[in-house]
Image 1 (tube, helix red, strand yellow):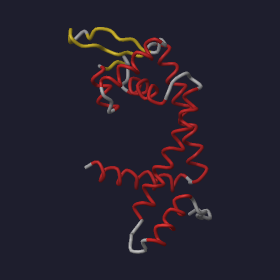
Image 2 (cartoon, rainbow, N blue to C red):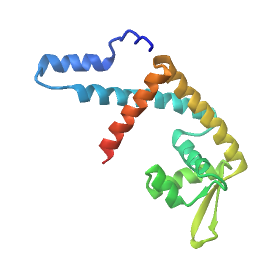
Image 3 (cartoon, rainbow, N blue to C red):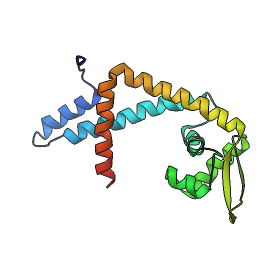
Image 4 (tube, rainbow, N blue to C red):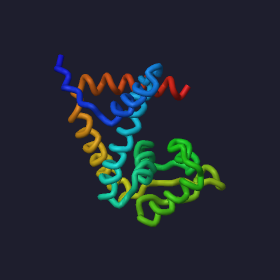
Length: 170
């Protein structure tokens, strides 16, 4: 079992300390957890934005390309399926699809099974780009994770966050 690294004060500790001074009756455990999750999300999000910018795409555009890639061959979904998976409005999805189509990373075509529908398909260029971008994004995340946690602790954290997310989304 690895030794736990020395813990340092962080900005959330300062906030919790302030609340303890003015409202010692509060249990701020939840604030400690969610405050850190929010700060972590923002910090890693900025790094992910930089990683994807090297490929000429935003994080939201990466999400569209990655969703198509994960769907497996022929890497095609309807705009409605994409919107549902990414929890986007159809208007938000249309803007992303327009930009990605102009860049030659995907194409829209009539759905052969529904003459009113469309299919969104990765192009060869889009497939190549998303495969490179996912590697770059994972490298950023892995570097951040391994800088603080060994594999065992990272697994424990993933399990704990899964439990918390599951309970929160119910």
